[in-house]
Image (tube, rainbow, N blue to C red; front, side, top):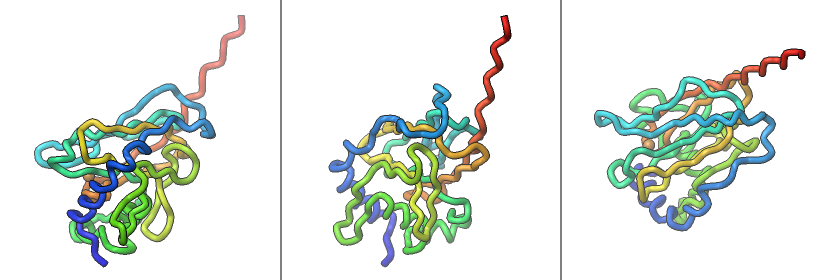
Length: 199
Ligand SMILES: [Cu+2]
């Protein structure tokens, strides 16, 4: 079965009202990394007619990573910020156009969000996979990744979680609604604190 982009938008619109309350949750307390107290932001922007993620090249393990939707969903539709393995990302225009078919990553992401083809609803705005926090890249063949659906009512929705992926990991991400929107961020190790000088 083919799932068109327009159809996905329609069904998520139905689901959004019901699940919006689930979107925001507190920071995880079980993370294995030490919080840095710093917040980094990846924003979703519309610039010169192009939708894109704008974010840092790297973040430190233990940073808060906040995703902000700076676009108007009524103009450009909703987005997802979905961690997915590099190999699962559609590179060519053609691959991007068929991303919403079974066994492809956009379709898989819809399923992570609880998409049910029969009811045409999703049940989760924030999908938490693996360890708490931004940690886990999913793929198109059964592995769920961390993912956030922006909702489609208003501009400015956001979510923040700690980066818990191991230092050295490059986190790849994609928007399942606009598969040409892709990006990556490297997770780096925290700088060791300087030893306290002896008196
Ligand atoms: Cu998008």
